[in-house]
Length: 300
Ligand SMILES: [Mn+2]
Image 1 (cartoon, rainbow, N blue to C red):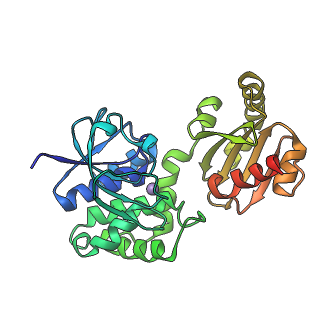
Image 2 (cartoon, rainbow, N blue to C red):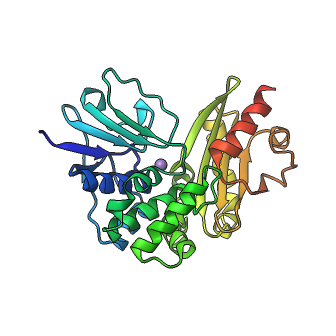
Image 3 (tube, rainbow, N blue to C red):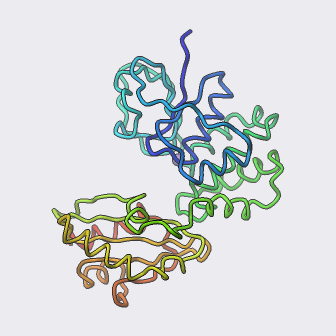
């Protein structure tokens, strides 16, 4: 049989990379990655002394197991000329398959949760695999604070932590998040663009960037720079509004900076901005808590 590669989505994150490594290990396949590791994932692999999967820039002609992605646009280049043999995921499914294949999707906080749940017996004998899966669960669920978290994620993480010999899950989670959560010394444009998405809200172009921090003061210290850059983006790139979400994962809330109509922000979030930003307690997720109310404000 030709070699089967397990690979996750472009701009790979910790769930994508760790799920690929563990699933490949369980099945006797080869793990691959479609791009550079982010700082958080590099920290996790280093922590468990696991080498990064080989970089696969083009998958044409290869056999692939896809983990942690659901949209054709997220697949490694050449994926349309690859043979997809299996999908393991936790998103809504947007794949069309022309042949019957194994598809395993569950509505949980991470792909790692799905893998751990179904292979726990094997994972029990491999503390490194347990650690990698735990890191992936903690990363994708933002240490269980994301509204995508389920009770199953928490229960499985506790079991994985025992196997991996990690006694303090919270501290381990914060250490993981800290690895990429500092914006100190980074150009503000990079900070805002590292995770930035464009939306069309009723014909208006709206851009929303987000960064997760363990200390929101890092953003407060650079508020002037943030606002200036957002305004520059808005006028330079034809946005109706540009928003930057600075999420404090410890305080569990976000400071929303914006360039655009303050009345629209008030309509969306039911709170008057103070100057060019507002603090929203409990808001952690762009997908679930920021984009939907903004879209509603723009379209109603
Ligand atoms: Mn994921």
